[in-house]
Amino acid sequence: MSADTQSQDDATPWGRVADDGTVFVRTADGERSVGSYEAGTPEEALEFFTKRFEELEGKVHLLEQRVASGRLAPEEATSSTKALREQVVDAHAVGDLVSLAARLDALGPVIAVQRSARKEERAQKTAESKAEKEKLVAEAEKLAEGTDWRNGANRLRDLLATWKELPRLDRATDDALWRRFSTARTTYTRHRKAHFAEEHERRDGARVIKERLVKEAEALSTSTEWGPTAGKYRDLMREWKAAGPAPREVDDQLWQRFRGAQDTFFGARDATNAALDEEFAANAVVKDEILVEAEKLVPVTDVDAAKKAFRDLADRWDAAGKVPRDRMKELEARMRKVEQAIRAVEDEQWSRSDPEKSARADDMIGKLEAGIAETQAKLDKATAAGDAKRTQDLESELANKQAFLDMAKKAAADFS
Image (cartoon, rainbow, N blue to C red):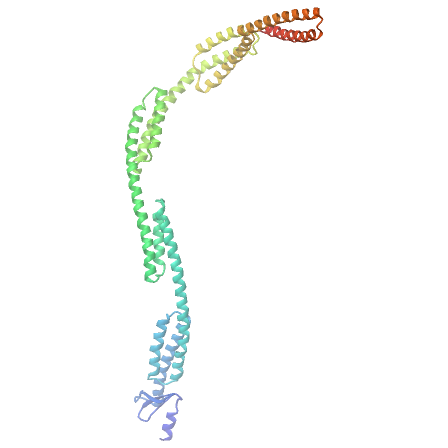
């Protein structure tokens, strides 16, 4: 080999160019041919194959970064590493291929750690997903047992959307939970449909009833029998409330007609009453004047005179006629108070002069006087006989009877 050839061979520690243009790369196992470059100088040949190495090194560096960041799944990282290592080992390039391969081999333990971490993460996510799905199933089954027809359907839709976002479990577990979840949804939907079918039937029945009530209410709206008709409207309102809601599209319309009929009747009644109240206002003035006279009879000193005066006032009261409704209770209460005061005094006098009580008092006096006379005779006889003890007992008995007689006479005087 010439001196020039030797210098070309030593142009790089990782490769050389032979005289025939063949390019060799140096590896741990010795040299191997990576190609030939006959179009240029040996320096250009080495530069060309060195750039190939640099491209490979760039790929290795990029893979190292992707592996380190964890963006690649372990399976993808492994396959990428394997494929790139095969390129490095058989590369038609000049450079430290051994070190480059070693860098790729160093990714194996890193990928293994990531694989283990991913496995643990998947296991944790699976456990969390299972717990969350069991929670969704429990809530769905609770909704299926309930009667929340307004919010239940929306909530089940939300639960289904959440279910779809959760990771799948192993097939057996996932299928079992899904069957429970699906069954709960089906049960709820069936019960909900049955409920609304029954409600529709009830509402349709209520519509028939309310249409009848509306016709009756409208027929009564022109009545002038204020009292009886107002009572009929109260009865119709009770039936209306008991009927329950009709279908929404007609319920408000029926109510407006029903309420309109009521308003027509009660408006006419109120207008009539207002006119009557105005007419009766003068009567109230008269009754106020009568009350002034009546209330002067209290306190009662002469019952007979008070009764006579009150009868005259009562006749004038009746003749005065009706008063406005808002004055009726007040005026009647004042008149009744005077009447009660007179009656109370009359009752008190009657109780004091009750003929039956007076007769009973006179009868008792007679019996007591006869008993006293009999006892006095016995006392005189005992005294004449000198019976001291007998005399003492009779004197005590006589005193008691005399005391009862005095009390009876006083009571009889009260009835006289």
